[in-house]
Image 1 (cartoon, rainbow, N blue to C red):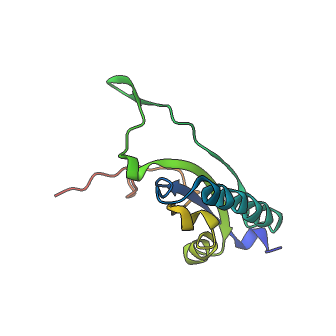
Image 2: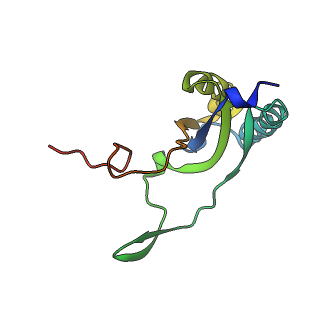
Image 3: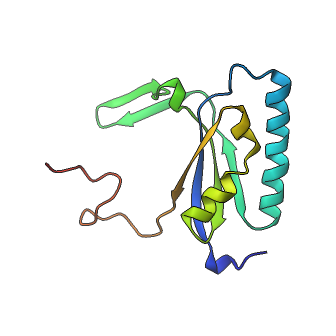
Length: 130
């Protein structure tokens, strides 16, 4: 098992939809292989548990609350997990072995920031000033 203090945490987002040309049996085989792959990585200290996401959603803004989901179907986020790796590149190598890639899904990997947000530091929420 790797030295946990030397590892960073990365969010793995499952994106997309199953390949329509794949049979239910092929997709189920990939899903079953995913859970075996995931369990092995958890036992090796390389993954933390995550979950699939439901299909309903709400968006809460200052203007109110509306029903979702809110992305195009090709951008659907179906679930999330956490990878423990020494670098973003290593996290990507781990994710590249995901059995569900062969059935149409893609994976976005993002580092988890441990710093608190600040209005004085650029972040994902900082508007681009022109």
